[in-house]
Image 1 (cartoon, rainbow, N blue to C red):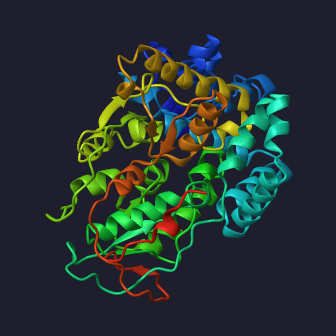
Image 2 (cartoon, rainbow, N blue to C red; image 1 turned 180 degrees about the vertical axis):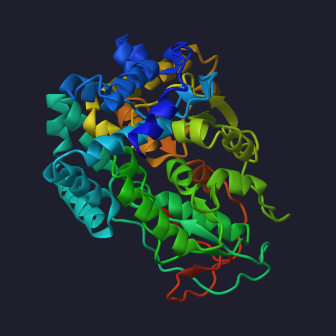
Amino acid sequence: MQSSDLLRLADQCVKCGYCLPHCPTFRLYRDEGESPRGRIALMQGLLSGELAQSDRLQAHLDHCLQCRACEPACPSLVQYGQLMDGVRAWRAARMPGWRRALPRLRLALFSRPDGIALLAALAGLYRQLRLSRLVARWRQPRLQVLDGLITHLQWPWQRPLPSGPAAGAASEAPVGLFLGCVSRALQPQVLDATVRLLSALRIPVTMPSDQGCCGALHRHEGLVDQADRLLARNAAAFGDRRAVGVVSACVAELRPALDAVELCRFLLDAPWPEGLTLRRSSQTVLVHASCSQRNRLRDTAAIPALLQRIPGLRLVSLPGNDQCCGAAGSYMLRHPATALELGDEKVRHIRRLIAEAPDARSVPSVLVTTNSGCAVHLASRIRAAGLDIEVLHPVELLARHLVTADPPAPPAQEPDHTLATSGAVSDSARARP
């Protein structure tokens, strides 16, 4: 976008201040430069030439989480996320080539299969050497965030799967399963659970082999051209097929280019076979609404509605769901101190719930969220606090409570990685590391 286009977007802001109580960084620092209207004023000064580039100005803009909590609160309907992405791209285009190369290299590690495999191998070595104990003593914010990521990073999800048309399939036209990039290594068990549940529902699914990273991380760092190329690649890979994604942030990024739906919404709207039953549960489950689920997809109802299919399950909305947990894509790596503070605020809410629980059954044992970055960050902070709460994707919880499922179909390999979801995934494939 040109600076004139960005200025037109910025001029929609009337500086009313309705956004202030919804902005996590403003609530933390009480600094106008850390608020949406303050950042928009800085953008206007920068784009118009009234303000020069400076480290302080850049720090205020970079410190934005891109959670978009300000957008639903804005009476003027300012497209803040689009504006921030545009300004970051405008600034990145004016950086020296070597400075643009650094974020490209970092993002390549997280978004390319070979980069993720390298990180997974290093993470395995880190765990074997038990370096986490050493990091715990230092209590350095960046190391704490990295430790949380490394603890969860595994070999990227890749399973031999059956192929061919699903017998008795509930749908004749298969949808496409979007696998993501780093999420395949952070939460491979989520994709196992997804395959098992889709198999039980008899929904035929394909997995396009040409798909790749959604590009959200690149866009938020100002690398808009690379983000657009990744989006175009996925649009070509899926074609007319509907893309079902397990990570809410990826789904939000894909939507402008293809028909994408978040997994919980898809499962909620899909027909369920009469013979499919879920085992009763007495657990209390905390429901975390990620920023991408709440402020971009604008759908917080699908998760609790879907989980209510489990008889006896008690669902509790995590207090402070209107505030970001601090993960925010790669934000927790770039601003670890802020990320830890926001994550620990969630832990304080959980502690209060536990303290106020009227009985043992009301104490939460599980927290569910649809975003892999949030899941890893929250799990890390919960573990650091010494709380015994498991962090899962909603589909993992559903898969655990399946009572009946069709027997597995004979395995076969196809070039297009077509999955006939009449087969179930084995317990060993679903086992948590």
